[in-house]
Amino acid sequence: MSLFSISLYHQTELYNLSGTMIEEILAYNKQFVENKGYESYITNKYPDKKIAILSCMDTRLTALLPAALGIKNGDVKMNKKCKVALFPILSVA
Image (cartoon, rainbow, N blue to C red):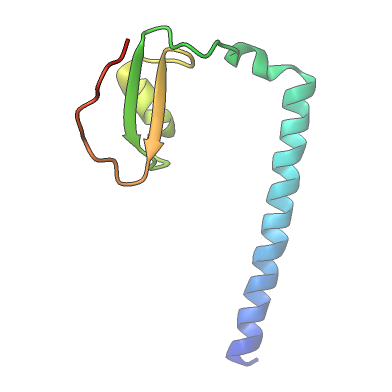
């Protein structure tokens, strides 16, 4: 077996895995919508705690940051960016 054929084999396996993963994700989403799982996440566009948080978009912070700050969906506006730089925020309220 050549290096090229091994590489193609791994790419095919990766494609098959990702195809299966996508199908699982879509099936879960279908059930989520049918069971109205989104209803507990409904909120308005104004954060309850009137706070905006600028954060790194690191995926490890998805659940960690709200848990560490004691916030839940709808409490704050959270803006996740790549390479967050701290800068003065001007209030116009």
